[in-house]
Figure 1 (cartoon, rainbow, N blue to C red):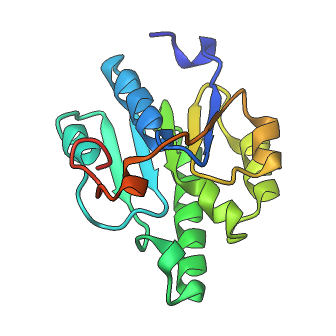
Figure 2 (cartoon, rainbow, N blue to C red):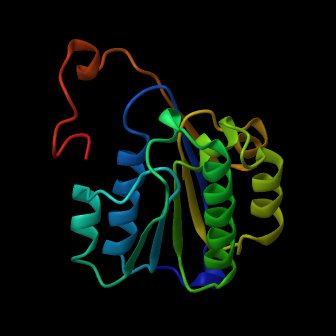
Length: 178
């Protein structure tokens, strides 16, 4: 693994309507951890329920995992609370990134917060441009990535849904969706 002073940190955005944004990011999480990198996962939307990825991450001593969201906020009954929670998670994420304790940080589903206008894309883009350590790999997932965030990213992938089991009446499958 390259030393930090010789590494170019990559900013990756996974966005779009299709499935696989977080799944792809978790693949990168485990790849980085496999190389001995210190990884921090911060989940913005998902609630406290356990996922297979989180269970797998518990097997690694170099992955730190924070599920901090209020759950599926598109069904929210309290948008003010969702805004407050998202802002608090964003402040927490900035502290983790500034700490220089990590080689890789995943901001899972932060793009939703931009889409709902809880955190501005410009604010996130400015932070990435001005405060992210140059050697840190940073991955942002979720639908509705802000144009400003897309602009500052090195790699952007848009997932397009062609077909989804849920639309056929099949509920979320353990090991596939969670």
